[in-house]
Image 1 (cartoon, rainbow, N blue to C red):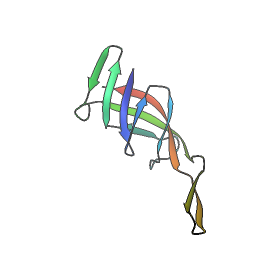
Image 2 (tube, rainbow, N blue to C red):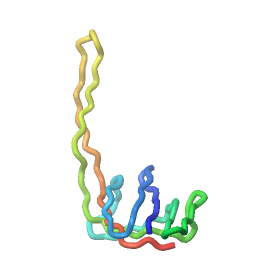
Image 3 (spheres, rainbow, N blue to C red):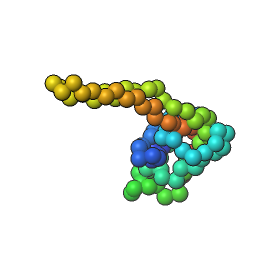
Image 4 (cartoon, one colour):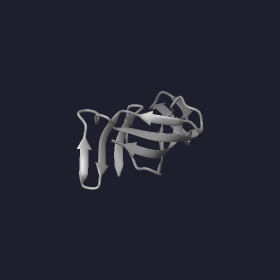
Length: 103
């Protein structure tokens, strides 16, 4: 069984028992989070596709970690002008362990 959820402007394919990193959520470690914006639920050969969301479906997950991803470097440069700028960025994330898919 798997589902496709939408959070933080992105879509994620999740299965019970797996851990997934999503955009930062406002939840403490150890708390549970429910997602009502379920786009697809599949159980074997039976697939339910929402328009845009599946009615009555939800995904329950537990917050495992709040952290920041690896640093990426942003380098801006103008040729022949002796101008450059180097900047780093670390995107915050929330790690979730999916416990239940219902619907």
